[in-house]
Image 1 (cartoon, helix red, strand yellow):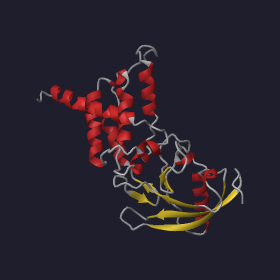
Image 2 (cartoon, helix red, strand yellow):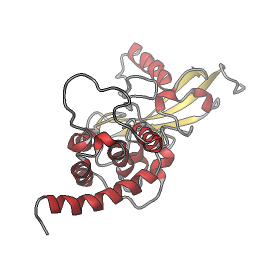
Image 3 (tube, one colour):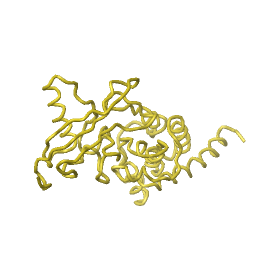
Length: 260
């Protein structure tokens, strides 16, 4: 069978199944025919429909918006976070990236900080804890200010928007040999630190978020796999910016508290 778009392809799927975080997991093999126009998650939906029809347990996986925005989806596909297409979340991956007769191995994120809930779904609470530590700004309530009241240099606005593109999927952690979360954390820190509205809490934010990250994740050793796996191609530069701000934050926060 050819591999043109829209054609039906027959695949062998090796899917990780695990009943819970403390259970032993295993790969199970399935055969699935699917149109190359379908998305990867639609292929899993169809597989699950077949399993349910046979009275078997469907495969648990996560998804929500299916538009590459929410960051809920995330699978290791043939050993690559989000699959073979660069700058693409799992939900945006289409089966035209595969050929008839392919064998596809599907696994959850592999990181100690992301314990498996069931099958392909993992617990990513540590990412939320990093954001809770300082990923916000405090603003006065009341009517909205005029759009041009706070001037923001275009370079700062552009860089902040680049950082804010992070969807928090966790691919950077899953792809990193050290299970580091520096790319995620630096994006969440810098999209606020780069803007005038984020300056009041800049040093407190930086120290709190970085030190929360260090409680759960490994250290960055500049492999660069995080950037390669990121569906939004967040720049490694943000890690350098975060490290610079962290050093400054330690000094400034000590002075504010009267420490030497």
